[in-house]
Image 1 (cartoon, rainbow, N blue to C red):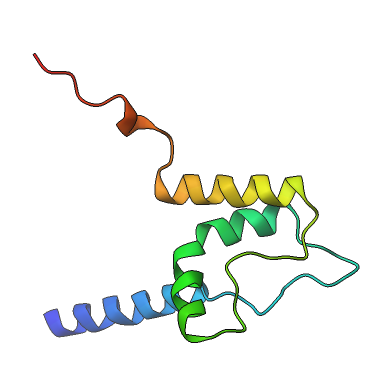
Image 2 (image 1 turned 45 degrees about the vertical axis):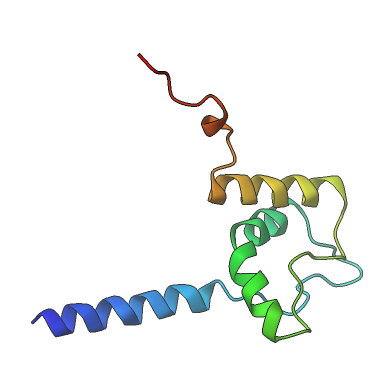
Length: 95
């Protein structure tokens, strides 16, 4: 029974990681990447970076974007996924 649970967990993890794989330039010249694409690419930046080490046609940043909205989504996605809220800057209070 435990083997089936472990097998199911491994299959689920592989499926989730495969869903994070980036596409090769998702934006065309007439339709640049916007806020939502930046947000998603910010979420998957670690997986994209690891893939880009082995596949040189994959980049971690969409160069064909609409500017500030894409950048805002990208940075927001990275902060939300990696916890860049600055909570650790306050430190813990000692008694």
